[in-house]
Length: 174
Image (tube, helix red, strand yellow):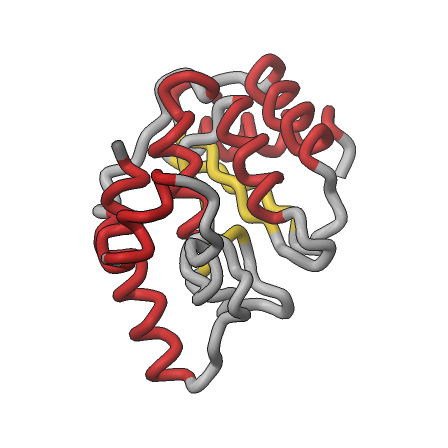
């Protein structure tokens, strides 16, 4: 939709009592810069938008849903629709584990203090549970939860992770 039209529709929705507005790239074709520009434009031009939560819903058809979600957060979105292990619509949505780890590592520096209270020590167990229940397994090279993610010896920092993989996500938090 045209940006001006979105401002008008969102403004009326907010006026009618909406507390969250969701911006969806349900075709999955936006690039991160487009997502960031859209959220920024809507924040600057929509009446009442400072009083609601801006949410982004990014499909992963072109493999950039997580980058789009992070771009949305950088521009002011404070809610993101995510998926675990890519389960979901067509190619899934933004990856929970990737968005969460980015927020934990860079949210305070690059995203105006954005944060999450998700316990990162539960991400691997959640991924494993989804794999067990669905029978759909993540690729070995999948970031954060893939079997090969932290097995490459790259230096002393990898040594501890290789010895105790269950603490990987906890260590990344530091």
